[in-house]
Image (cartoon, rainbow, N blue to C red):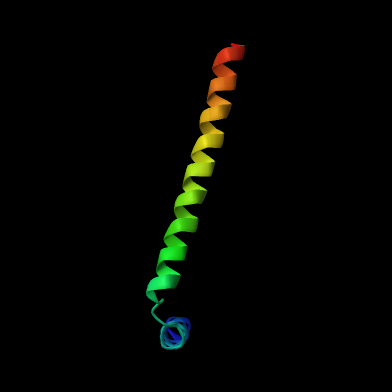
Length: 55
């Protein structure tokens, strides 16, 4: 029971420290995340094409 209480107190502390991102920060996060998804997808697609061409 003590571990649960400690965990809840830590969660409360983290939530009090965090802040809502500004509009500019949010846009930057969305752009970087989207770019990362596209890059990983392109790499996966390229590997798939290479595998298909070799087999």
